[in-house]
Image (cartoon, rainbow, N blue to C red):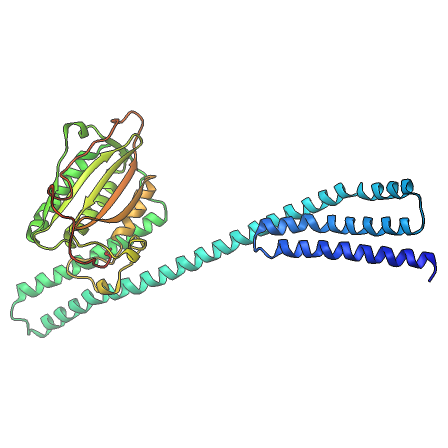
Length: 373
């Protein structure tokens, strides 16, 4: 083999070794499934090619007995192309990152659409189930009235009115949820004294609570009387009415529901605590989903809606720029609504209403019960 072929063989061998080492590095970078790793591999790949070529040519130059000075000049000339390779790799990496973000966003959007569609199907199934029950009762009553076999007509009409009212509530909840999804809530905002709204809601809840043997307690300290929020008063009343009536419905006879107000420098807070025994921890994350109920609460009791109450609460509160959450505390659970305060509101912390339980009373309660909506 002549010296030229030997130089070529040496150049190919060195270039192969360097290229193989670089390929291993690129493969190691791509083993991590992330956009950043892919970008790093995109930058490294052209640099590896340039280094492999430079190493091969330098080795062949030395094999052809070029002087060390000449060989160094050849090597420097080749290494001068490394910045070009880096820029090329950076451009490719930016393109890869852009594609990665687009793919990730598209996948996230697809997953959200699938989740929304799944929840929509669940909601339709649940509402259909809940509407079927009063419809069946109404059909039975009307058939009996037509056949003249009803002995107590006033009682039958009262039952018919009850079922109509229940269906009307479900339809109203569905319409409200549709308005929330369409962004048609919280459009008519005014400055509202929070204590007045809380007082009205508590006053309206006391009669049905008393019939259920439940006490609803609330109060407003003088410092809290000027606490104002910029909200749609009707929507805020609906939020608090849903929470308080929900708390009353799930508190056993002899229990108590406490409504309290608090304030931070930037938020007004309303807490509704009950003695329901708590909510299962795995259900706390889903109770604000439309139509969600655990299996034990699958069939609504008297006065229950379609499981949309808490979803409506969250939608209205978020439309006002606030947040709502739930947690287990003491003998039951606490629902906490936070709303942004307008500038110039009352500063500092304010508390209205009694504590969740008498001082010194142990927090123990009955076992956790399922979520409610």
